[in-house]
Amino acid sequence: MRVDIWSDLVCPWCYLGKRRFEKAVAELGADVEVVHHSFQLDPSFPRGTSRPTREVLSEKYGRTLEEADEMEAQMEQRAAADGLEYHLDGVHMGNTADGHRLVHLAAERGLADAVVDRFYRAHFTERRSLFDRDSLVALAAEAGLDAAEARAVLESDAYEAEVAADGEQARALGATGVPFFVIDRRFGVAGAQSPEAFAQVLRRAAEVSDGAAAG
Image (cartoon, rainbow, N blue to C red; front, side, top):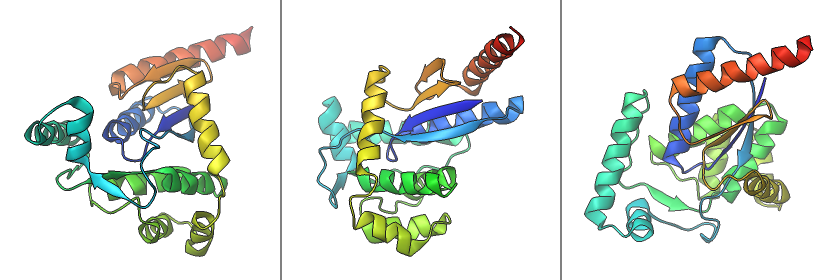
């Protein structure tokens, strides 16, 4: 079964949704091929720069900085309930296009899932930068990519078109945010649903697939 996942590397719900989806897959013992797709929550950020996430949240939702801090504290608690360790105090937001380009490189090397996980953990747990190219290269290498190849990608325009195409495809499918899952090219699931909800859709997709094969 193929599952396409659109996400942004600095989206806390995307990391949480990925973990919940993986729990559902493990519980079902499903045979799943995951294909990662790029989605930028804010492509207007100038590359190589960043801002404190609390400031971004404050402006986006019309909240005070203290209220933004409380939003992040609540997110940390949600993540902890699913076994993820978030440390959001001091985390920054920035342009994720370069990170997404490395995920496309990783997909060609069979390492997309490992690189996505490494970037998530770096951003949400370790507070390492996904907006500095030296940091991105180091993280990509830790996930198994060749550092020289990763740097060559970042110093070129490689995979720029693929990142843009992923975003266009998401919009064509009606996705207005992430995470967004398409299961077996039939069923769309928006948001970080519970493992039980993911399992239900996975079972339904398997039933439809089995029915089509029998027919």
